[in-house]
Image (cartoon, rainbow over all chains, first blue to last red; front, side, top):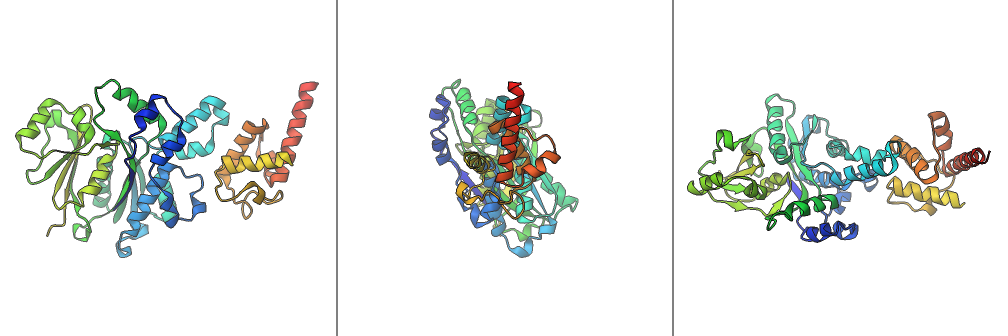
Amino acid sequence: MEAVYSDNFNSIKELADSFSRDNDRLSRSMTDTSHLADYLPKRSLRRIDHFSRMALLAAGKAIKDVDPLLFSKDKTGVIIATGFGALKTTFAFLDSYIEKGDKLASPIHFSNSVHNAAAAHISISYGIKGPNLTVSQFDMSFFSALITAGAWFATEKADTVLLGTSDAFCDVLGYCIDKISSKKETLKYLFGEGAAFFLLARKEEKSKYGYFEDISIGNYRHAGLDIPKETLLVLSPSSIDTCNDDFMHYLKNNNKSLYRNHLFSPTDSSMDAFFSTKLLKNVCYVKIGQNGEYGRMIIAQNLK
Amino acid sequence: MELNRKLKEMIIEELQIEDITPDEIDDDMPLFGDGLGLDSLDAVELVVQLQVYFGVEIKNIEEGKPALQSINTLAQFVKTRQAESANEASS
């Protein structure tokens, strides 16, 4: 279990105001992936973009963190969840397409812009031979990936699953966030970027940090949402903007603790899962989308 | 030699080669395999960038294979194609 992340995007509003191409300033705020050279030969990283580098670094750290006896590369699957994919590379490809035409669009940008590029780089770079999947369901991506990992265990497709998330910031995203936030009085959260990876195993007794006790996706407006009383509730920052007053009353009336992380990304739930395992408490993490859809995960600690 | 230099700079920039300078690329060094170590994706990018930078098109593998051997063969290909285009424009 490892994560690499950056929360130093306080300047995005200013950058976005002028739609600045201040790449140097933006790059200083980006997640530092220079340590990737400690895990993979520098030459093999050529052409790999920032989005994939974050995923490769977090995955490499997660693998290093694991007892090699629990990690058979032949029986390990890879799942990456991402809300946006490699946005910066995608826009670079679109720019080359628009500016130069379809015949002269960059093949290298195209190869990195596909959402599953990062997962492919991970399997190839670390020699992992099990199934490989990329899931993109915006806010629900991480929950969907966890449910898929559960299905892989149930059907014995893999003994272990290297599951992670990656979402990256770029100047176009900063511009969009500024346009959205300018319509509101205040932006209640900041955009962060990063990657977090977990090596999941089927048996909870092998767990080093804790385990995902339950994962669910649903819509609280149709079927409600159960929060176990004994858990600490963590609600994602975007959820507070999107869920309605009735739900907030429901939470307050049920004496639920409400914690708020001010950083947002479509896959920030993986960061919360990462930090949750450092708490000595069972945690119920909930992320709520625009139309009442929710992802819920209960993370149990090894308290016994 | 100016063209050779431009080709080397283009290759380093567009193929994202971080650990080599233009001076370290020998004019006869093989671009693929044991030389500079380029691969098939680089070849496709190189074909696109030759058109962007120099306005010359490699239309098929018969043209591409001899042209993409080294900086010298690439430069010769660019010179020949540019001369052909100039002749066509003037006639």
